Structures are given as structure tokens and as C-alpha cells.
Length: 111
Length: 111
Image (cartoon, one colour):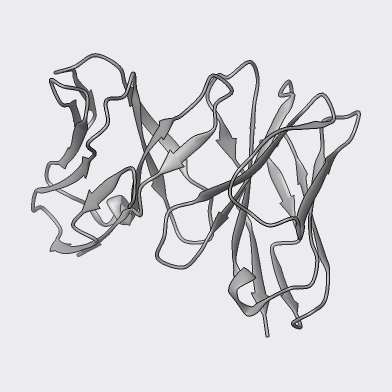
């Protein structure tokens, strides 16, 4: 069983549409991170959420951490082709920074 | 700052062979972690090096070994390659458990 379950696995939308991807767990976390990975590249950190109920915005991306700190969502408004990529959520499971990732949501935005 | 650099970018090996992958961390970083990312999956933690020692290890067999040099660069060695070892191998560097930066990865194909 995966510690972090991401849904959906794959999302294909047209430019200008909105989308939401989810990251769920039965465990409670002190923080959760979202990464974007483009083909041929390593993951790049987008945001870290720390407080239950926290909402963070990064341009057209809105990240929310669940009140119970077990789940998180990423909402993209007016998606653009540049938003195409694999979106990964991850948690640090120890004090040395070991990361555990979900399987990711592959997002494809077509013009 | 060159960021995290990995070499080679692509590699094809035959079953049973051995492979060495290399990673140069971001300037100022002293901790190197290695991850394996199979197609369609999130990265899986292999091990982490700090002060030239393996500090922690994920659920990978002893065929996977590593090394960290005095300049903080690192190598990942895999012996007796299996078809299932085909994956993207990612190196991440960090300092004092701050944000981890990932390299672009080495795509290993075992035939």
C-alpha cells in the first residue's frame, strides 16, 4: 500500500480549463511538498505546506493542505501548455530529509 | 551555479553487467540522496550519503551500493543488473535538511 495516493493518474485537458489533482493518505504529516517533473528532468519543488487548512498560491496554482494534515490538493486555473508535467506529492519521513513520493498525476494541457 | 549534475544522461547495459552513475551536488550542499523512478511511478528512495558514509537506506538489495567523495560528489553502483533495474535514477542534494534539489537523472535501460 502506498503511503500517498494520488488521483487521478492521468489528466488531459484543453488550454484555459481548470483542473484539480489530489494527494491522500491515512497518515498525518507535519508537512507535505508538491513537485512538478517535466520529461527528461528531475522533480522541481513547487511548494511546501505545513499548517492544517493552509492555502498557498503560486500564480495560477493553488495548494491546500487538509485540516487534519492527511491530504492535499493542487488546483490549476486556466491551464496552459507549460503546465504539462508529472505532479508529485511527497512527505519527508525523517529528520534527515528522506522523501517518500506518491505515484504522481500526469497532466497534459493541449493548445 | 550549475545545480545538481548527473552523468551519463542515458545508458544501455546488458543483464548481469555492472553500472556506475555519478552525481555532483549543488554548490554548498553536503548530503546526497539517490532515488529510482520506474516508468509511471514516483521516485523511490535508495540511500543517502553524508560525511562520506551511508546514513540511511531504503528497501533495495545489496546489489545497490554507493560512495561519497570528500568533495561531496557521489556514485551509485548497481551489480548483476536485472531487467527490472531499468529506470530513471535521480540524485538529490541538500544541506542541513533544507530543500532538496534534483538532477536531471540518468536513464538506465537494461536489455
